[in-house]
Amino acid sequence: MKQPDRHPKARRGFSLIELLITLAISAVIAGGIVSLMVSQMQLSTTQNRNMINQQTVRDVVKFMVEEIQLAGTLDGTEPVIIADYQAFSFYADIDANGVTDRIDYYLDESNTLMRRYSTDNSGTPFIAEDPIMSNVYYINFSYFNIDDTMPANNSEINSVELKLELDISQGTGALTSSKLAQQAMVGRATLRNKMLDN
Image (cartoon, rainbow, N blue to C red):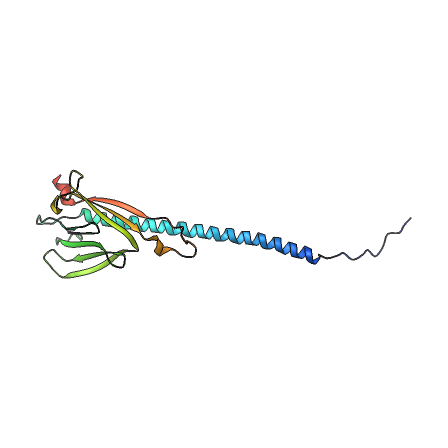
Protein backbone atom coordinates (compact mmCIF):
# COMPACT_ATOMS: atom_id res chain seq x y z
CA MET A 1 0.00 0.00 0.00
CA LYS A 2 1.29 3.41 -1.06
CA GLN A 3 1.93 5.95 1.65
CA PRO A 4 0.25 9.39 1.15
CA ASP A 5 2.64 12.10 0.24
CA ARG A 6 3.26 14.14 3.36
CA HIS A 7 4.57 17.05 1.34
CA PRO A 8 1.98 17.93 -1.36
CA LYS A 9 3.14 20.19 -4.11
CA ALA A 10 2.67 23.88 -3.40
CA ARG A 11 -0.59 25.27 -4.91
CA ARG A 12 -0.12 27.16 -8.08
CA GLY A 13 -1.18 30.86 -8.34
CA PHE A 14 -3.03 32.51 -11.24
CA SER A 15 -1.25 32.64 -14.51
CA LEU A 16 -0.66 35.95 -16.24
CA ILE A 17 -3.31 35.14 -18.86
CA GLU A 18 -5.89 34.37 -16.17
CA LEU A 19 -5.13 37.68 -14.44
CA LEU A 20 -5.46 39.60 -17.71
CA ILE A 21 -8.80 37.93 -18.50
CA THR A 22 -10.07 38.72 -14.98
CA LEU A 23 -8.98 42.35 -15.29
CA ALA A 24 -10.65 42.67 -18.71
CA ILE A 25 -13.94 41.25 -17.42
CA SER A 26 -13.79 43.54 -14.36
CA ALA A 27 -13.13 46.56 -16.59
CA VAL A 28 -16.15 45.74 -18.80
CA ILE A 29 -18.40 45.34 -15.74
CA ALA A 30 -17.08 48.55 -14.14
CA GLY A 31 -17.55 50.44 -17.42
CA GLY A 32 -21.14 49.27 -17.64
CA ILE A 33 -21.83 50.37 -14.06
CA VAL A 34 -20.26 53.80 -14.64
CA SER A 35 -22.21 54.22 -17.89
CA LEU A 36 -25.45 53.31 -16.12
CA MET A 37 -24.72 55.78 -13.30
CA VAL A 38 -23.97 58.59 -15.78
CA SER A 39 -27.21 57.83 -17.67
CA GLN A 40 -29.18 57.95 -14.43
CA MET A 41 -27.55 61.27 -13.48
CA GLN A 42 -28.37 62.70 -16.93
CA LEU A 43 -31.97 61.54 -16.68
CA SER A 44 -32.39 62.96 -13.17
CA THR A 45 -30.77 66.30 -14.07
CA THR A 46 -32.81 66.61 -17.26
CA GLN A 47 -36.08 65.82 -15.47
CA ASN A 48 -35.31 68.36 -12.74
CA ARG A 49 -34.41 71.06 -15.29
CA ASN A 50 -37.57 70.33 -17.30
CA MET A 51 -39.71 70.64 -14.15
CA ILE A 52 -38.01 73.92 -13.16
CA ASN A 53 -38.44 75.34 -16.68
CA GLN A 54 -42.08 74.29 -16.83
CA GLN A 55 -42.83 75.83 -13.44
CA THR A 56 -41.04 79.05 -14.39
CA VAL A 57 -43.07 79.46 -17.59
CA ARG A 58 -46.31 78.60 -15.75
CA ASP A 59 -45.60 81.14 -12.98
CA VAL A 60 -44.74 83.94 -15.42
CA VAL A 61 -47.86 83.36 -17.54
CA LYS A 62 -50.04 83.21 -14.42
CA PHE A 63 -48.50 86.45 -13.13
CA MET A 64 -49.04 88.26 -16.43
CA VAL A 65 -52.62 87.00 -16.81
CA GLU A 66 -53.48 88.21 -13.31
CA GLU A 67 -52.10 91.68 -14.06
CA ILE A 68 -53.75 91.91 -17.48
CA GLN A 69 -57.10 91.05 -15.88
CA LEU A 70 -56.74 94.23 -13.83
CA ALA A 71 -56.57 96.42 -16.95
CA GLY A 72 -58.90 99.35 -16.55
CA THR A 73 -58.92 102.99 -15.55
CA LEU A 74 -60.77 104.88 -12.86
CA ASP A 75 -61.83 107.65 -15.23
CA GLY A 76 -63.15 105.44 -18.05
CA THR A 77 -60.18 105.98 -20.37
CA GLU A 78 -59.53 103.02 -22.66
CA PRO A 79 -57.06 100.81 -20.81
CA VAL A 80 -55.17 99.38 -23.81
CA ILE A 81 -52.32 101.58 -25.04
CA ILE A 82 -50.27 99.27 -27.29
CA ALA A 83 -51.55 95.97 -28.68
CA ASP A 84 -48.78 94.43 -30.74
CA TYR A 85 -47.94 90.77 -31.30
CA GLN A 86 -44.76 91.10 -29.17
CA ALA A 87 -45.71 93.97 -26.88
CA PHE A 88 -48.70 94.88 -24.75
CA SER A 89 -49.19 98.07 -22.74
CA PHE A 90 -52.16 98.95 -20.61
CA TYR A 91 -53.42 101.03 -17.70
CA ALA A 92 -54.37 99.41 -14.40
CA ASP A 93 -54.36 100.15 -10.70
CA ILE A 94 -51.98 97.26 -9.99
CA ASP A 95 -51.28 98.03 -6.35
CA ALA A 96 -54.86 99.11 -5.55
CA ASN A 97 -53.77 102.52 -4.26
CA GLY A 98 -56.24 104.54 -6.32
CA VAL A 99 -53.57 105.61 -8.85
CA THR A 100 -53.65 104.24 -12.40
CA ASP A 101 -50.32 102.68 -13.37
CA ARG A 102 -49.00 102.02 -16.85
CA ILE A 103 -47.71 98.49 -17.46
CA ASP A 104 -45.61 97.57 -20.49
CA TYR A 105 -44.77 93.99 -21.42
CA TYR A 106 -42.22 93.46 -24.14
CA LEU A 107 -39.27 91.33 -25.20
CA ASP A 108 -36.02 93.26 -25.10
CA GLU A 109 -32.99 92.86 -27.35
CA SER A 110 -31.26 90.40 -25.01
CA ASN A 111 -34.24 87.99 -24.99
CA THR A 112 -35.41 88.98 -21.52
CA LEU A 113 -39.06 89.65 -20.91
CA MET A 114 -39.37 92.89 -18.98
CA ARG A 115 -42.07 94.77 -17.07
CA ARG A 116 -41.99 98.55 -16.87
CA TYR A 117 -44.05 100.68 -14.50
CA SER A 118 -44.94 104.35 -14.62
CA THR A 119 -46.62 105.94 -11.62
CA ASP A 120 -49.68 107.12 -13.50
CA ASN A 121 -51.06 107.75 -16.96
CA SER A 122 -50.36 111.48 -16.98
CA GLY A 123 -46.71 111.16 -17.98
CA THR A 124 -45.17 110.91 -14.53
CA PRO A 125 -41.58 109.73 -14.98
CA PHE A 126 -40.67 106.12 -15.32
CA ILE A 127 -40.28 104.25 -12.02
CA ALA A 128 -38.74 100.83 -12.59
CA GLU A 129 -37.90 98.24 -15.17
CA ASP A 130 -38.14 94.74 -13.78
CA PRO A 131 -37.06 91.56 -15.51
CA ILE A 132 -39.80 88.96 -15.36
CA MET A 133 -38.09 86.08 -17.10
CA SER A 134 -34.81 85.55 -18.92
CA ASN A 135 -34.11 83.25 -21.87
CA VAL A 136 -37.44 83.84 -23.56
CA TYR A 137 -37.45 82.21 -26.98
CA TYR A 138 -40.83 83.42 -28.15
CA ILE A 139 -43.69 85.57 -26.97
CA ASN A 140 -46.88 86.31 -28.82
CA PHE A 141 -49.91 88.37 -27.84
CA SER A 142 -53.25 87.79 -29.58
CA TYR A 143 -56.28 90.00 -29.09
CA PHE A 144 -59.98 89.23 -29.26
CA ASN A 145 -63.18 91.23 -29.05
CA ILE A 146 -66.35 90.11 -27.27
CA ASP A 147 -67.27 87.77 -30.17
CA ASP A 148 -63.84 86.07 -30.08
CA THR A 149 -62.90 87.64 -33.42
CA MET A 150 -60.04 90.02 -34.19
CA PRO A 151 -60.76 93.54 -32.90
CA ALA A 152 -60.73 96.44 -35.32
CA ASN A 153 -59.00 98.73 -32.80
CA ASN A 154 -57.71 98.78 -29.22
CA SER A 155 -61.03 99.91 -27.78
CA GLU A 156 -62.65 96.66 -28.98
CA ILE A 157 -60.15 94.40 -27.19
CA ASN A 158 -62.04 92.25 -24.72
CA SER A 159 -59.43 89.61 -23.97
CA VAL A 160 -55.72 88.99 -24.48
CA GLU A 161 -54.09 85.64 -25.11
CA LEU A 162 -50.37 85.26 -24.63
CA LYS A 163 -48.03 82.44 -25.57
CA LEU A 164 -44.64 82.29 -23.90
CA GLU A 165 -41.88 79.85 -24.83
CA LEU A 166 -38.59 79.32 -23.02
CA ASP A 167 -35.28 79.18 -24.89
CA ILE A 168 -34.11 75.77 -23.64
CA SER A 169 -30.75 76.03 -25.43
CA GLN A 170 -29.69 78.45 -22.68
CA GLY A 171 -30.16 75.85 -19.94
CA THR A 172 -28.22 72.97 -21.43
CA GLY A 173 -25.14 71.58 -19.77
CA ALA A 174 -22.96 68.50 -19.79
CA LEU A 175 -25.61 66.39 -18.10
CA THR A 176 -28.61 67.66 -20.05
CA SER A 177 -27.03 68.09 -23.51
CA SER A 178 -29.93 68.21 -25.98
CA LYS A 179 -32.46 66.30 -23.91
CA LEU A 180 -34.45 69.25 -22.54
CA ALA A 181 -38.08 69.47 -23.60
CA GLN A 182 -39.52 72.61 -25.16
CA GLN A 183 -41.50 74.54 -22.54
CA ALA A 184 -44.36 76.74 -23.69
CA MET A 185 -47.49 77.99 -22.00
CA VAL A 186 -50.60 79.80 -23.17
CA GLY A 187 -52.70 82.05 -20.95
CA ARG A 188 -55.78 84.15 -21.61
CA ALA A 189 -57.12 87.10 -19.66
CA THR A 190 -60.34 89.07 -19.99
CA LEU A 191 -59.88 92.75 -19.20
CA ARG A 192 -61.62 93.72 -15.98
CA ASN A 193 -63.53 96.69 -17.36
CA LYS A 194 -64.71 94.53 -20.26
CA MET A 195 -65.99 91.92 -17.81
CA LEU A 196 -68.09 94.62 -16.18
CA ASP A 197 -69.45 95.72 -19.57
CA ASN A 198 -70.59 92.22 -20.55
